[in-house]
Length: 322
Ligand SMILES: Cc1cc2nc3c(=O)[nH]c(=O)nc-3n(C[C@H](O)[C@H](O)[C@H](O)COP(=O)(O)OP(=O)(O)OC[C@H]3O[C@@H](n4cnc5c(N)ncnc54)[C@H](O)[C@@H]3O)c2cc1C
Image (cartoon, rainbow, N blue to C red):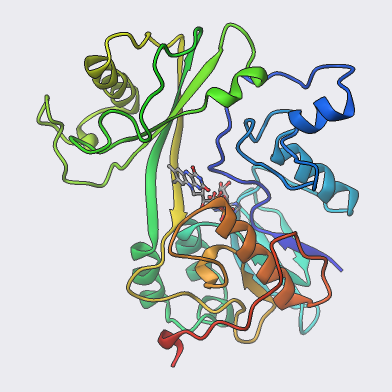
């Protein structure tokens, strides 16, 4: 049996370009500390960058590969169709012209991706989640939470910690800046600490000094202005040694329309983001992404090994579904 994930990686985790491999010859206690697992084997996902050698991305990648999963990164899935060879098989059509046959597909992609993929798919799949193409587009447009991400790297620790969200979280463009001092052992010198920032490009907020909107600036200008704003409040803050724009990232927020069904009505196509409503979807978070992915796997096969996310609760009842 072949299964396909329309996405094989966590797109908006806190990755950084400046990570070190784990230290050679680490003792098991050091290694445990290094890979963010406590004695019970629980993953403390934010103790190191997810893309550090022992961060959750390589750990999960290794676990998937050990289970025989083939991971194809950078493979855009354009549409899904019923395969002509057999009644229940699916055909995934890729952006590069290739196609793959699968028994089931799990869509772990945020609303903008779904808004392209589902309407381009065959009728039973496009409309198999209880919406026609038009209402699906509206629903998905309203369900997106989209921010520009950026990372500032510093070659010395910050003299004073940033307050949660940064000094300007409550004014101007309301950016969110979070210092990740705990990444220090994992950063390649000269980087010693990082601050991660995100800002919405779709707001009417005006900058408190410049009077401009975020959409009036390039990403690089936004990064420069945002850090300048921090330094205007706390002049002891250093200039960054490097700034990386991580790009537009989107997550799911469920507003107005309620969730989508976890499975298409008559096809083995599953929504495996928190848009399926089987996770605490009031917040777009890695935790809800994990829980909703596990719920999609269980909906496909109740016997699948579940991630340690706690016992499955009763089936949620959604008033939107009638
Ligand atoms: C700016 C920002 C900051 C955040 N900060 C935090 C935080 O601090 N803590 C926290 O817990 N959560 C945070 N979140 C939320 C969290 O990142 C998301 O809820 C989570 O990443 C969702 O995981 P996902 O796997 O569903 O989707 P994503 O992580 O978005 O992954 C989707 C992937 O699908 C790929 N894709 C899209 N379309 C296709 C296609 N057609 N074919 C193939 N692949 C496709 C994308 O390239 C991407 O790699 C943040 C979100 C944003 C936007």
